[in-house]
Image (cartoon, rainbow, N blue to C red; front, side, top):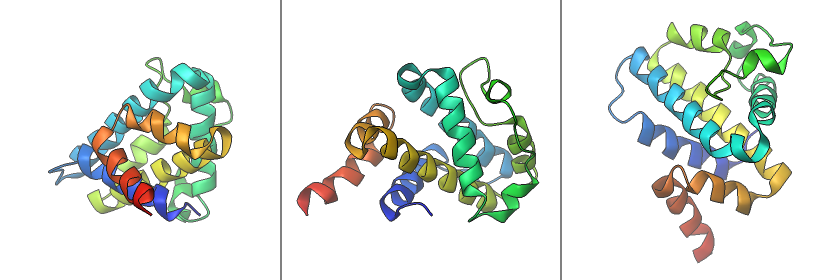
Length: 151
């Protein structure tokens, strides 16, 4: 289960990336943009394979809350996950999402992004994780940080 803070931040990021997405293709485009941007922010710290392993673990953990993800074939080797550009969403996941309604794509994207943030926070701490996200998505992350600082 992802934390409510990670869920809210993931929803803000998805909303920013998917602004105006009305079709499944547009929603999938937002997911792919998020994946590329996340890879660009995180892979330099964890390495391409480390990033891919985190994505694979997040996908596996997300299956408990989203049983429909069981349809995505398990990726046995991290090398198969890490694309040449450093992105890490497995092709079977992208292929499956292509046929889903935009609301399903959004739900899965938010779950995976929120789960990734929680997992990353476990390893490096939430402050550093948020700083890494802040470099890529300044507005949604700043909005998430401000209420916590005011409390």
